[in-house]
Amino acid sequence: MSPDSSSRPTARAVAAEVRDGSRKALDVVEQHLAVIAAREPEIHAFNVVLADEARAAAVKIDEMVSAGEDPGPLTGVTVALKDNMCTRGVPTTCSSKILAGWLPPYDATVVHKLRDAGAIVVGKTNLDEFAMGSSTENSAFGPTHNPHDVTRVPGGSSGGSAASVAAGFTQVGFGSDTGGSIRQPAALCGVVGVKPTYGYVSRYGLIAFASSLDQIGPFTNSVEDAALMLDVIGGHDPLDSTSIPQQHPSLREAIQQDVTGLRIGRITDLPAGADADVVERLEVAFDTLRAAGATIVDVQVPAFTFGLTAYYLIAPAEASSNLARYDGVRYGMRVEAADTNAMYGVTRAAGFGEEVKRRIMLGTYALSAGYYDAYYGKALKVRRLISDDFERAYQHADALLTPTSPSVAFQFGAKGDNPLAMYLCDTYTIPSNLSGQPGMNVPFGTGAHGLPVGVQVLAGTLQEPTMFRVAAALERELSGGLQ
Amino acid sequence: MPEPDVPVRITPAAVAKVARLARLDVTADELQRMTAQLDGMLEHFADIDALDLSDVEPMTQPFPLANVFRADVVQPCLDRDEVLAVAPAAEDGRFRVPPIIGLEL
Image (cartoon, rainbow over all chains, first blue to last red; front, side, top):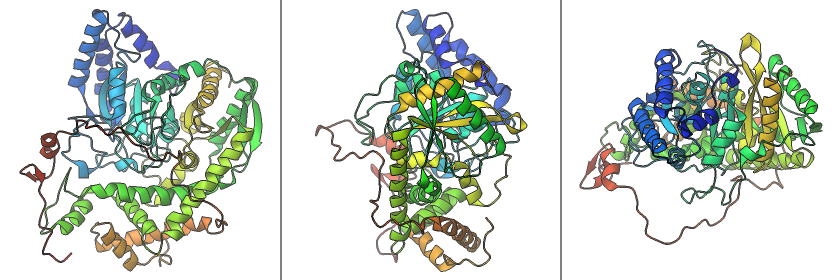
């Protein structure tokens, strides 16, 4: 398995071939199903593979192309959806026992948009239960394995979608990022992963974890593919009142521009904790951008270091409220009891896993009378500090560069029973969720054990075009052999 | 971070109360473990105690949008039978639940 994502076919290339009739969508699907059949038993990227549905969709697309119709910019592109995105009539579990047996009565907006653009959904991917975790070890259905080394985690929480792209199961994967759940697994699996600005992509049909932080984004084999995906799924949706009511500029056009004249910020007071191999690659990335015509500037984001605390009070608080709906009444499993109140308690005890319970408890505590001001209220103020610090930094820099993950992919069980050790995996990704600003992982060579290392590009609110320009420059220089 | 033997920031009784508020039944073992883990987390979270936040406005959402309305026009909604078909229990077009009235809650 090559850690180099550029060796796998891009969605853009596949769409071009299927669209002009030189390749059948059905052949594309069959090829991917064959790869899945060969490696899925050792990877476990999927909660469900929708083989028949994918074949049927491919046949339809091939018929359209034969009839001279254009199925859209993603014609014949195979996609994997994190299993917290609703798909009508198809099990959507959040990798939790509590949603056992539930079939969503509607599709998420991203699913509509992908199908309308000609994409083919191949399966629903594994995740840490309700997207809570950084390793996909918290799934009720067992962990996903890293395609680069199956003794290691793929990261999380969107580990299944990251692994699906890295293993060549699908050209594209989709995940959700609340504190790093797209970027960190993208780094560990050696693929591109983007968390856009909060509100850039509709969250309608994404099962809520922390509503002021959650955002959907793609995993791809190239920066251009990621731009293509966001051009398709981005934009206002009347069904999501938090989606930004404006049109986004084309990111595929944005990446045509180089980085000459851009100011790239180095955060001088970044929290320590990244491994030496990760820091080394980050330094190469700075050198690469300088050589490509950018200027490197020093910036400070003093409150960055308090992101972890603010996040682990705010996200569980919101989760404790969002997950109150899983009570055995309207969907999923129920454990019978003499009265409704008792039924709630036993159903939730049986349905939720340990990490989800821990966060519900933490969030309920942070919101409870007598503790609200000391914990949740204070965390909201720290969130403001972080946001203000970023604003100041972006007056001096057009984009910032940091590690994505403090380390390469770690082994199963490496974080032990200490929840904080796992939470520290998100040190570098969390602050931009709190500020609502975009961030993306760009695979940038390898580190310890020959495993992928990524660098994170951050930018200001709705500055995706700049962020993508930087990402494209890194990718270009790396594939050009300038290391 | 090692888990402290004796929790100092939160007691098992407080954790039991939170579990009741969250409608989450916990075993005695879970209560002990959760108390120790929550205590360890709260200790870490004390890093923000030193910050002067007196003049800082709380930030509840990253992209402030106020009063988002849609046109006041009847729209199709979810199909009732499809929704009830996947509910744990349904009867006469409604969700069915165990008794809620006349019991000590």
